[in-house]
Length: 404
Image (cartoon, rainbow, N blue to C red; front, top):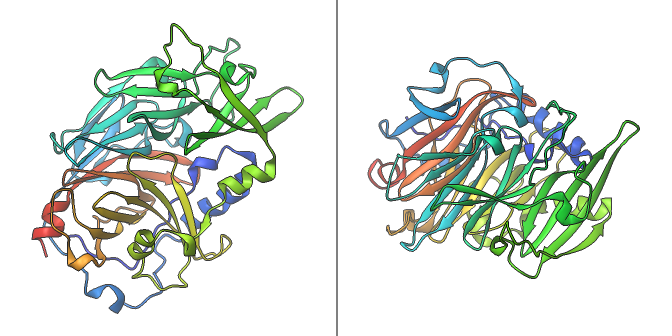
C-alpha cells in the first residue's frame, strides 16, 4: 500500500565520505541516518491528510547480483550479503535524466562495480545494464552529469578501502557513456591536469562548464589534499582518444573556497518550484535536499535549518520540465505537476504518497522518471557499509492518475 508515513529515514551525504575537508559533515549525516530510524515527523496529520494516496500493488522489486539484476518479491527476500564499504559494493551511486526528442526522459544510473543501468520510456520496466568490467572492477563510480547530451561520470579508486597493487594502471577519472553503442570512452586522466598518476581525483563536481576537483596524493610520510578549478574551451566529449589535443585552463583553489563550493545553500534561496514541492512541511522543519535537474550538471544541495540539528532529515529531488518530485529515504514523497504528456494533477498543488515500506536498515536513494515509470534505488546500509541493493519500479500513471 502506498501511503504517507510520519517516519523518515535520512540518507547520508556519501558523496563526500572520502574527502578530508568534509569528513566531519559526513560523520554527522551518517550518524543522523542511523539515529533517526523510526523517528516521527513532528508535524500534524492535517498537513498531508488531504493528499494521501492509496492503491494496490503497481511496483516491481529488483536486486543486483554479480554483473546483472534479478526480480524479487521484496528486498527482505534477497539473499544476505557480507557488508562492504559503500565504495566497494554493487549499488546505484548516482542518476541522470536526459531529455529525448519525445518530450520525455532517458534515465541512466551508475551501478558501482558493474556498469550503467539504462531505462527508456519506449521500454517500460525493461531496464538494461551496460557493463565494462575492466573499468568498473577497478574503480568506484561517482556522480553522473550531462555533457553535450551524453552521460559522463566520475571514477576514482578509494585507497582507504581498496587494495592497491604495486603496479598502478593508468585509469581515467572521467568517462563518457555512449548510449547508442554501450561503449565507455575515457575522457580525462590525471596527466591532462598536469599532475602525477599517483594522485587521485577523489571528488569531481560540474556546473556551467566548470569542473571542481578534489585531489588526494598519498606518500609514506603524509596524505595531501589539493583543490582545482578547470575548464576546456573545446567540449571534452569531442576529443578523440587517438588524437588528443586537449588543453585545460586550471586554477588552484584554497580549502576555504572548496568548502564554500560544497556547502549547501539556504533553502530560502531555492527556486520557487523547489520551495513549492516541500511546502507541506512546516517552515521551520529541518531538512536537507540534493536537487537534480534534467540535462544538468552536478546536483545542488539546500539546507533548511542547521546542519547540526539532530532532527535533520535528508531527501533527493528532481526538477523536470512538467513536474517536480521529492523522495525521502523512507519513501515519503511529494509530487507537483504532470507526468510527461499528461495533464496537471491536483491543480498544481503537492500530492503526498509513500513508496512501499522497507525493512530496518534499508533506505531509498537516487531516482528518475522515464515515461510513467519511477525508477528508484534502494540499499541496505550500516554506517559506511552496504550489503544488499537494487532498484524499485513504480507505475506513477496508475498511482497518481487512477488510484485515488
